[in-house]
Length: 91
Image 1 (tube, rainbow, N blue to C red):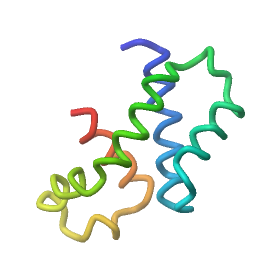
Image 2: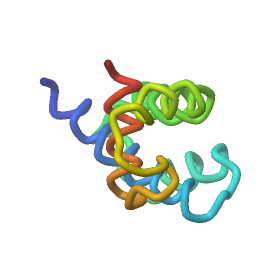
Image 3: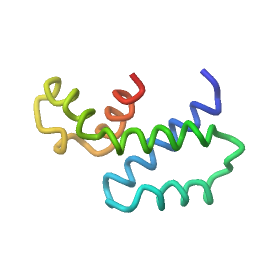
Image 4: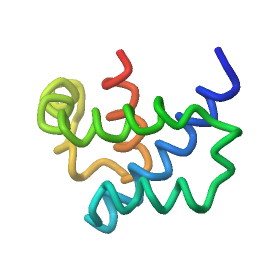
């Protein structure tokens, strides 16, 4: 696993959490991360792909997750929900 991809996942997880909690525009969140972080240390394209992919497919991703959960997806802890959505998207 490349270190830059690992860092992209880490930043994507943080950005997804922020998106879930605030409902802010995803483009603004992405831009904020690109300004606040050293973009030479992570794969920016992969970071963008993860965020936009999860956001565009959130209903489908949640549909895959729901049968595996003992509660509604929205009741899962926000950090865990971001991890699950990111993981399902990557699979």
